[in-house]
Length: 334
Image (cartoon, rainbow, N blue to C red; front, side):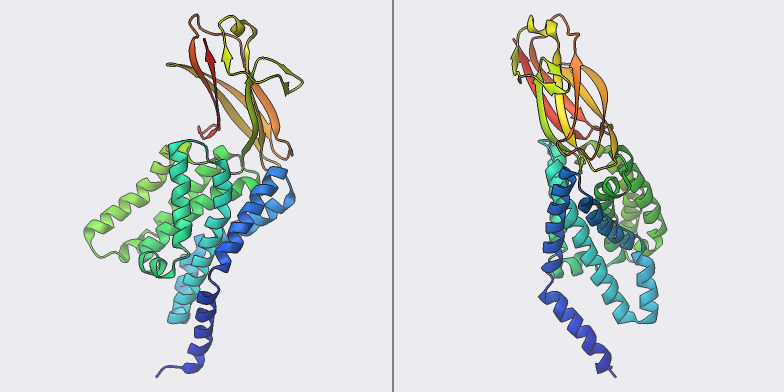
């Protein structure tokens, strides 16, 4: 016999969720843009919003344990509650992170693809039939999607909340997710039917974090924003001279300066790299920035020594220590 008194509240909750499901991604997306603007202005509201996102990340990590406990207590209700909170928090994570990732994405094919995949994942969480069929239906797909959302959330919120430099945020998140995938591997493998799928899934769980680490240069440096960048030949008290695009070999005797101003979350101390490239030759110069400056932390790299034949296009890439592209500057020597 079906207990109508238990089914009615659940039906009302399900009906309300489907009716107003657009609110969660809309609010999260708006919160992401607010966070992006506040990070650029160095205000505390960004950290407050990021703390909320970090709590959602914590839920994704403990979700399998909560799900198992709830299903033991009430099978139908436990599954519904776990799926409801997971989908809602995945929407919150992805839509909060998306504006920060879009703001950090440069004209780099890898970064554009990475941000586009995050946008597709965020969209999937809003389409209930697709989400329930392809993500929530099996533990393997659900847990891998959890891992993906957790990595994106950690990369975005850890620098904002815990003031972790970007070069530490990604490895910390990958280590945590690797351990989590191993702990939940029996649950994932059990939900797959064939030995082939199980073998593929074990390989993905073990190699996925390593593959993402290998592609780390294509992860947008969310939270860092270049507010000004130019190539010049003079700088006085961190105030650059006129921008130049074309130089002669005689001009090079005065040296060339690559100047940038970068906004970062308050409390973050971050190293960056100026990589000067010409043909097959390259030179790397390291500088440091600190977050919380409204107009951006100003720094520069000066190059004095040039090869005998310096003609051609010179490129100055501003990178994080993990080679995430922040800005690309160019000038021509004729």
